[in-house]
Length: 248
Ligand code: PGA
Image 1 (cartoon, rainbow, N blue to C red):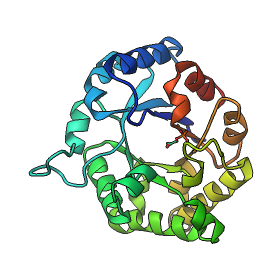
Image 2 (spheres, rainbow, N blue to C red):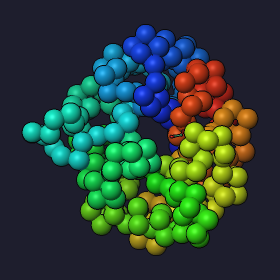
Image 3 (tube, rainbow, N blue to C red):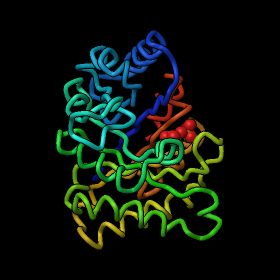
């Protein structure tokens, strides 16, 4: 039985007071026994939000992590720094990093490895663009993005990770993949990993991301291979985010 997980990705939104107020409203809406909920906070506010949510059911995540361990890499944030600030999860390979900041399958795999080395759980984001979907390349893109990580980290590494399937055409566009479209890809990902290790595939949390809202979350999360969501826009409002979390 897989544990569901709902993660918010705040992206580059809000200032210090907004983040603290949002985190406070989320924890106010949680009960002591809740689990499987996290927020990915902008780096500069990670420590402070981390302190606020320490000892609550809300877990702390980052939106990226360096592909190197330490040293002369101006502007980067290492996995050990994140660990030191109480971070549990680090997104790697979000499509906005791949598209706007030239992250490649190789740098994403290196980030994945760095996070894991420090005991931070990497959340590997994969997914196709609209052009790739229309060109019937969805599964080929998923293969490439997954293979890069499996080749560098080994399939065993997936045991301590999360995968987020996020079709790029559904991110921030209001166009959600249909429940069946999402399930088809999630099933493909799980089967592909099962070919290498059935036990790892069975327990792997595969999240869906891309315009998840309170009104479509329940149907998506009821699909057999969808174990939760990575939520952008709707995670900036505590009520929406909690409502999505409660749909699991
Ligand atoms: P969205 O973003 O929910 O705003 O589409 C999802 C994401 O980018 O993780």
